[in-house]
Image 1 (cartoon, rainbow, N blue to C red):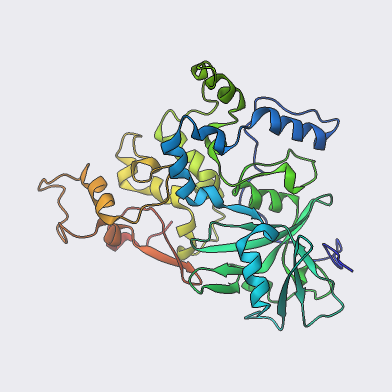
Image 2 (cartoon, helix red, strand yellow):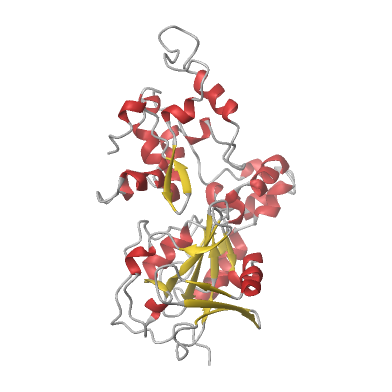
Length: 372
């Protein structure tokens, strides 16, 4: 017998609160509340064109986006290459619990079972989230009850294999006969916050969290708004008649868009450890003197192509630094004038499990310890 949420009851320990707000869909109007499911599907079809529709006129940006992590941040688990790979591996021993997870592909479902608890039915996993650059994490969603569970294991690039999902040390103690058996329980807000940062758009409040109600990945229309009408008019040579629904008029608005998922000061709880702040890049950038002295001109796009994969060309980043810090006595670095600006002023910090990020707080080395 297969149950999506075996033994789950309302008396179990709640999961930690999500750090993001429930995502707000970028729409031209609200679907009818009388039939959320049907209205939402009609609304998606009528308003969202999909990334491929952008390629005809914006081929350069489309090709760049296909190289980026944003273009593959979410996939249905059973359809992912990782599902097949895990099924071939067969099982994984939890590093902190007395549990061994077995993996199986069966009739279009990816199933996970706790081998140490034979009476607990297998769990069908819904989504695999993350580009895989650092990690990919699986979640199971019960659409009508609007709840889910973040799986205890993730695929970690640093290990080239499964490992403990980041932050799951706090769930070492669990109710073996509840959904906690599989990982972190998630209420509707948790699920929508988690999926919201990996999707172009998701269902409105109150609708079932069915897979077909989401537009996976951070696509063109996540940042530019639904463009179906624009595409139809562009095919007639009239694309300019439909203006962008979302405009980035200044650096502040640009950074705010990135911060929806990459986190800013509004997401801080005050309990973060220094190494955890590497996941709050907009927060770090806005504390930098480079930003504060830019007269509101410095944004994420000064260093990162918003359509393309993150560049690892340090020479390119040094050139960007030197566009402001020119070869003058007052601006040349006294330590390493020809050195690596990034390594010295914004070094990578390990977040967890060998995963490193740059916090984007550009500062003097002696000030790195002052993190908040």
